[in-house]
Length: 431
Image 1 (cartoon, rainbow, N blue to C red):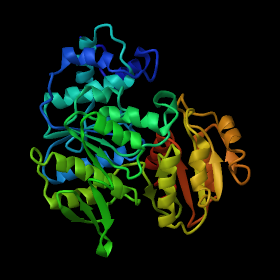
Image 2: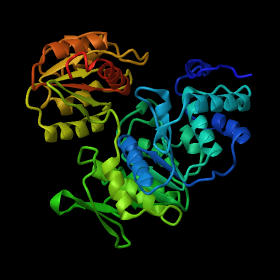
Image 3: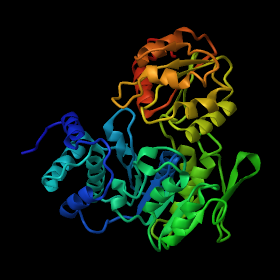
């Protein structure tokens, strides 16, 4: 008999099962998988880690494979609106029924092991993929790499998109320490794609020490702008691909696209892709919450940027976007983040700041946020509120036609804004 009969009940129970929200290590998931799944996976596997850009890289690789006619399996996190977003098969979120059935199999296999919420979800994704194997599976690392549950399985190709200072309590205080943790997904004798030109030297050193086949942007692979708005991807083999501008905004997306192409080219013998499929995938790939623009009399811009590097990328997008009127930012962050590193790159673009907090139990209290930004903001915040909806109301009320509201700082704040927009845009006259 199943422990629960609906997804919400399963998820609520999983959040309480382990005493810690984050407990890195492969012992628990390894022991459960040994009783649950096969020793070797029946599909080629790509694992994508990094501080920023991994979600974009996953989305582009998925879109290219689907454009080539392949059936894809994707595991990513966190979700924005529904837990089901974390597990996709052939571009569609899996059903509640599939997730519940997998959770039941995991519950029976785990014995007394206290799995975390993330570990349960990771095992469920692989279990679902094994039940009906796709042509290719792409896994997004949750936190770090070496001890992340996703790293239980040996990837055929591993990608690290970028290295930045984030999650320092778990990964280390320096870029070199973080690079070592991220490099834990690399496997001997297999391609290791590095999607950052100026990645810390430790990342390349670790790739070589582990006996991988490194493919780094600016060395083994590269890209340059072409004529007519396109760009050229190149590899040491002499291959050069003339490609269209990615649908996902930002100059950094060329780096993410290059890494995705390199990963798929490394699997060419098992997963051949035509240039036309690569082109189509670049133009089709979308990722909610990453410079997602809702146009209207009042424009909404949603971005999950939650560290300094992501905020710099957001600033580049804002510069290219060119808002006609005033830009008001609604900011909410989690407690382990550095709000100053997020705010500073955005100061040239934002006219008014509205500080708040989401309902996430890990959210930084708005009083703490206000205190930490007192020396950074050019003046006092336009408003502070412990209720994100109140902050959004205040930003909307102060805005006029041609203005824009930016919601930034975390997945949870963008998720709340997305829900609000989905349910209330019509009533607010298309805002």
